[in-house]
Amino acid sequence: MRRIIITIICFFPILCFAQSISDYLILQDIGPYKLFTGITGRAFSGPPKQYSQTSTGGIVDAADHFSENDISYDASYTEPNSKWPFVKVEVTQHSGGDSNKWLQHEVERGFKDIDTLDATYVSPNPLRVINNQKIFYTWGYYRWISNYVVVSIQFTDLTGTKPEPLEVVQAYLQKFPSTIPTSLTLDNAHKIQWIKDEMDRRLWLCDKWFVQVTLGKTDQKTALQQVVGSMQVFLNYREKYYGIKAADDKNLLTGYLSANDGTNIKAKLTEYKNWWAVNKEKAISL
Image (cartoon, rainbow, N blue to C red; front, top):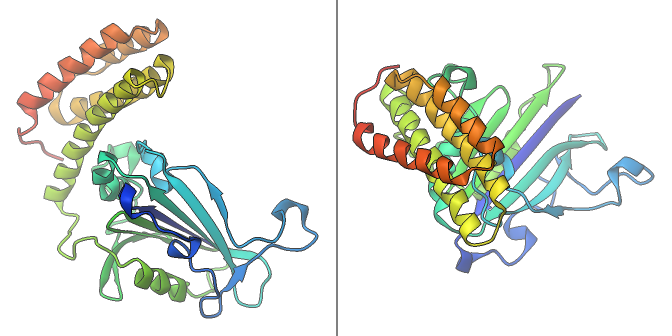
């Protein structure tokens, strides 16, 4: 059985929210792919529906995206001559805020090899051109950004005989044209810049979580868990690309976290930010 999952994350500034579900989803058949409205009598599928709504940061949650009241919508389609869901479309609208600036960075993260600290990709070249537009693609996953919209399609063909769902991909490219620069190449210079941006983002995430405590939007324990997690990622990159051992600092942070010691965690964050300000422009090699 082949499955396709399409995820579209919509991010519009607060004053530009779309007004209807059709602004996010295509609520009609797309070529041979039929809008899925449920299967009568199947308890697991729930009542027939065109879409559902959840609160989530969408696919970029996996990159520790800082969600600022994102809202996700989803719809499904069936493959030709089948009643089973074949395509799942998820649309997440971002409510605004400075987390928008990391969207393409976070989408690209999904195509990187975590074990190599993002110096390589899960396939040799996860860029593809469809309808003269550049998107990320590998192993049946299609993703792109369209300003503040992120589109992700997962296509699985267990038989290896079915065609790609290009009608669906093209329909959503028409609805949300890719704004990935056509000049983008995933060469070593880009990889190095991405690594430095990730180190930047991790320190930025720490600040965002501390602000949430100050604003009373989260408790200190939750924020410190997020902060220490990002600081440890920062230390991993610093060790690999700048040669500074991370073990002692990571042990200290784990102890501070266990003691709910926000004061010492903040002091470490200040230390790392000061170090980064001095060393950020230094050359690194892959």
